[in-house]
Image (cartoon, rainbow, N blue to C red; front, side):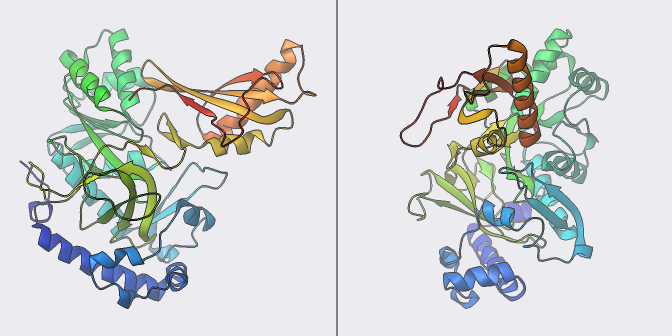
Amino acid sequence: MIAWDPNMEMMPEEGLKKLQFKLLKTLVYRLYSFSNFYHERMDAHGVHPDDIASLGDLGKLPFMYKTDLRDSYPDKIFTAEQEELVRYHVSSGTTGKPTVVGYTKHDLDMWTESLARALTSCGLGRGDVIQVSYGYGLFTGGLGLHYGAERIGASVVPTSVGNTERQIELMQDLRVTGICCTPSYLMHIGEAAKKMGVSIRDDTHLRTAILGAEPWSEQMRMRIEEEMGIKAYNIYGTSELSGPMFSECTEQNGIHMWSDICLVEILDPETDEPVAPGEQGEMVVTILQKEALPIIRYRTGDITSIDTTTCACGRTHPRIARLSGRVDDMLIIRGINVFPSQIEHALLGIPAVSGHFMIEVDRVGALDTMLVRVELNPEAFSDKINDLMAIRSMVAHTLKNALNVSVDVEIAEPGSLPRFEGKAKRVIDRREY
């Protein structure tokens, strides 16, 4: 077994706990002293840094929510001066307001270190050629994996997304051994390769895939590994935490969450009380060493469980299980987070459209598709095809701008879509994971 930092990754649990508490105390005192947001939030919650006397006191601290980041747009929660920031990443926005994450040099180093451990634990290292097919730019996936791969001494092919046939040619020409992308895009690459007469298994050197940014299942892992002859590993992270940060190891038995970087709680979403290891709940994360945008008790919304036993690989850091869902209604379409509330917000700005709509999500081949069925107001409905086509085109354009992902649109007659007496169930998701 090879580890990037064996002393840290295999530190006995007692040592990890002492380190976590030291980092937590430092973080809490720093933010209480220098962050208006956290100072006011702790005061309102009736907690002082002196009240944190053990890791068991973590639950005394207030939660941080996505809305806190959104409401602080762009940088009201930042605790680093602008001249200390070396990079920004920005989310696509949910209800019209994106979230901005700033990074100091230390933040980028911590992020890169986390990914260096992750990639090494998947068996990658110096001499490997890693194709990064996540998007580069404001999205964190591309640049995050890029720097992590360079840190371990691998050669990087920064293909980003799209231009699939060219990606397959480069995979062959440059003898790519590892790829980082969404699982659906890897499946698409496999299908495109077949059409080109290329076998990923027999005609390339690819042997490892680091997959994430959208839900996927053990069944999809088996299909990828059987059809392509490679090992597929799950990776986790969110832009609020930094980006993709944590992955499985070669045991493929849970995602290692580095204890010196983050503190993980699994809580009952109804009671906010911790659940036992192995039981499912909402994951709440504290990032212990973040400078520009500190994160204490961030409610990720992701449902998972935790395993605190030492992994068969020898690593002592806890592992989370594959995500089984979310506490909210967020959809992930081709790697993009989409909330039904986003769609509603966009549609309500179009006078011809009523407030009634339905969302149907399918998987065609390897790619996610989303159809939005939109009901028109009676005065806007017409028996002229050209009029309806013009409205449909305008609605599709509006949704594309709002969601950053293309969706199909179907126009429905007034009064034809379902009505709901209770909470509206507007999403039909037929994808299988």
